[in-house]
Length: 221
Image (cartoon, rainbow, N blue to C red; front, side, top):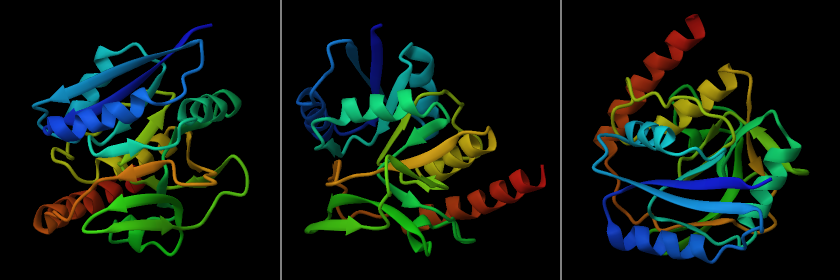
């Protein structure tokens, strides 16, 4: 049976996105798999853009990735199909994140960070954290650099109406609905993130406060 995999990105930099597409086009594609590329331009937020894309595509498998994310694992599609077809409870996976979320909401300050990635800021860095023993390891949160799903849940564009914490909040929603969020075993990094040095710390801090309030309400409900 043919299956469709949709690659979804919010786009405001065409040059970066074209490079992202080139990496997708170089992936090995199983004969029964159809690839769909779905850029969302002029999105009000990451969550709203992803919700818009979710409505537009009928693909069972969706890969939400930043426009500056380069998939360097040529067998990514084979790995995706193996993980999702053999683990029906695995709702979402990514490549880096944490097994616990600190009270401050900053996943990389967790004592149990997981996964691996190559990132390019002023120089290239290889980030290596806790590795899975077998197919994947269960985590509480993923970094939004890439998030693949086999089930659909609306992204929380209220209150996350910007570009931060949409990823951690979505992970917690998947877990709340009984799904597992995971990071696969990666013998080598699957992703290169051309993230650069720009960081809007003021806005990020604002959404951290929103996240903490949102998380507390979720625990109380």
